[in-house]
Length: 583
Image (tube, rainbow, N blue to C red; front, side, top):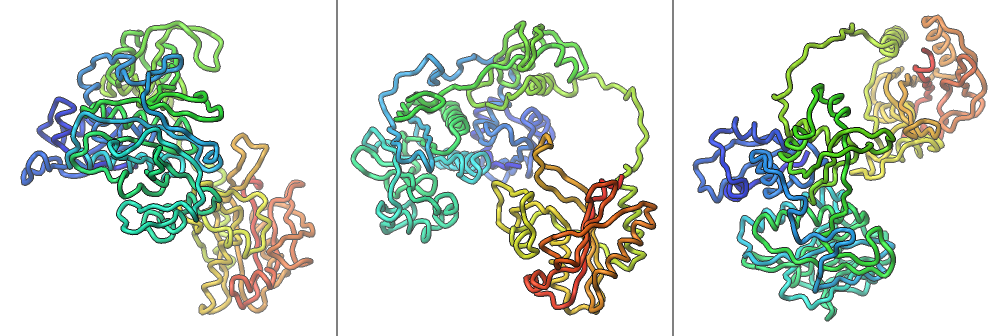
């Protein structure tokens, strides 16, 4: 979960309140789903230097990941004052565009790699060290957590006084375009930045495979930055004492991009900066049109019926009660009679407009949740449970425990493995087809990029590092596997599997067949076998296990090439079967 450092003096000034004890402050943070992550008050430091470390327990509210955003939420909650629907007058809205004297021109050449941009100008207040640190922290949290390590959203801040407008956002040849990057001393091409600059190496995975790279320049051709990697050393070096700067965001998700821009703009406005809108001009159509003025309010109101609120919260609330609770969450709302999204029947309820810095209202249930938090959990009367159930083990758990006892009796040792791994370990080395394997779209490392679709690869990994141990080796695991399934609602299924492996000089198809027979004998279940062709097994020495007319598993002798892939020098037999199919 996100953690932020909050300057205590700035925070108290924004909230217009203070707390004497950590317990009081912890209670106040409940409305933001946050908690104190350090000592509350360090009297050894001046107030201006005291830092509150706070952990946020909800990733749906990126607007809370800054000093100003968190202060805004607490101020609304403890004042209970209903917010103005248009609390921030610098926002453009559909059919109500603000006038903008500055423009950013987005060229079609950047569309294939990083097509969208948002931005605005902040001025009228001088940046001091605490403000600059907080601004950089908000920039980093949004880009790393909300922006998926800068893939979908990145943030750049520039000295506005040095920029010749309009700004051009375009694609560039990474081997030709060059500039001096921030914290650098020599001019480097974009390709060289990815290889030599610390930030370039850290975020090279975003751009290195592209033929065209994004570039931000002013009307005189001076380079502002190489999004999303690094700013230039001159225009992009915002410092203490600056009083006017351009905030730019680029990315692949237009809605996430503009939400992040809205969050930063509202934070700066709360801190006393004047926000000047900027027009973003495209040459092809976007969901916001050919051009729009940023910051831009794109959120839609959400209706929630009183019936749903009663169902979720357990109490009947009036529209006025709901509106008062939403006001404490900073949400403007009105009493209305309408139908919820996807429903046809109308009813009484409230229509809520998410504030400019929020876009987490995906369903009427989100409105009900804010009403619950705004009213306060302690305000709801506790109720005793009306229905009682007896806890008991599921049939699958009972079967798994029975199988473990059988495997122990057959001389096998239980293993426990990670469910995540690399394609090399789950597909290539065991020579599996990989047709149904699930790949994670945004893995932290290629070592944990795939979700296993069988247990045998995990067993082979153990055997590959066990050559020094006395033979025979007999290991097993009962665990989860997952694979793609187009017929399932979620497109994938998770199943409980048993997998076991034997390694010794005399291990062969017949010994494994005898163990399968023993297994089913103690389960009191009948099965059949059919010839199977599986990449991990020797052709003609593998069999499919058929139960109730359905293939539920496979066993046989591991192919010599597979053994060589793992560096295993002893013959191995293995089996795996779907336990849920036996129920």
